[in-house]
Image 1 (tube, rainbow, N blue to C red):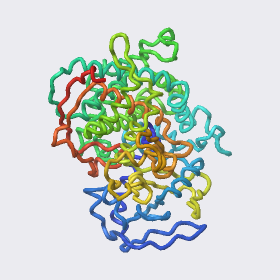
Image 2 (cartoon, rainbow, N blue to C red):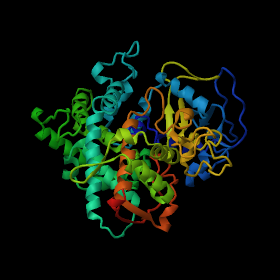
Image 3 (cartoon, rainbow, N blue to C red):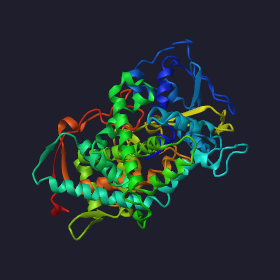
Image 4 (spheres, rainbow, N blue to C red):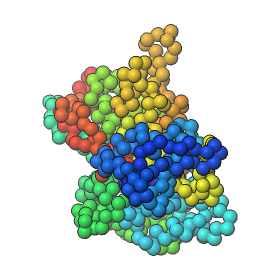
Length: 547
């Protein structure tokens, strides 16, 4: 999740295709696919317009979940849109087969689309993606003549793995854990013992978590030199679909002004790092105060060796990497919203986290994240939040060989689309309770908890598991290039939630208790959804004597 949206352009790139599809595809019965052959074409009536599903324009989620459209096909189908076509895959077994075969797929065209449209990467740098036919494996494809330094897909992904799954993860995590602990204790010191009104719970959590992540990623100087960056970061995020749709700047001047400010902030920070960094600034963990993570320092060297890259191009790439943190931040906000909305759930979470809270000599509460990762209820809240709130399109494209999806064959160089929303809202795959009292469009952590046999005592602690949900719970994608940021994201969400419930009492006011997600054309398909409105609350310090 942390980076998968950028890697696969899983956001709005496909939204454009879907909008085009509205002018072409119709509702109707499908023709069955040919076993051991290519999937059948989803039927359409009119060559130009067909049966226009207008509902997508004001409620994309409703369209995606409509049982009569191509996204709901029980087997793979080919969807034709004007001069383009793509395949839709859904269902746990089909999705598992897709992920298993993803080693043969490429994401280069979609990465190029996202970087060019959303993050303003220059044409001369983008052209390197077109020239890179070496594949994503350690060994280049036979016949590829791309120099090792110009293997942009492989080199960028390997740098991500080193950072988010290798040597860079622990120092990055340690900095974030210290940052969020300090940020929330500072907020605790500012909040009194009496109830205080605040206009939006989601903004409170989002700001504290974003500051903590940005400082952990980039060091203190990005925000110090650019105090407006926090607001521009989220304004950019809200305008993402504007950029991906390719609207010219004169039709959306404010959106493009926001992007320019955000990119300029990254450039200012990186120039400051180049001017002040020296080898003596590197700490024992390999990081430094100027670049922050060694990840960015090493990327400077990596990109400058590539054809077509200069400092401006690097800033576009690096802003994309920074922006990708938006999903875990937004997920943390929703997680905390769900906890405070339900007093009984809040009591259960506090019973879990209070038992593993540690106190420093100065009285600060800290947590060992390994203990948080063992808490069944907290983990179930995290998993259910991602199931309910994650909306994006997983995109794959077989590169040099056809791809087998059980009894079907997807030809090479054809786009494959799997919407997470469809997988996460499949009532045939998800538990809805003994009497269907927990429909899939409502929050219920019981989908991820096991309570043992009927003869087991009632006080036995439930266990958390996602093992039986492979192919159904897919917030991080899957396969060889499953989101490498998933390890950090889970830890970030759990720790932020544990600290919030330990330090604060929050009462969500009535007008915010049932806030809906933003399912507009502008808001849907960008990963974890934003709320459609604010979540007003009252907040006060939690009496630590109750812990």
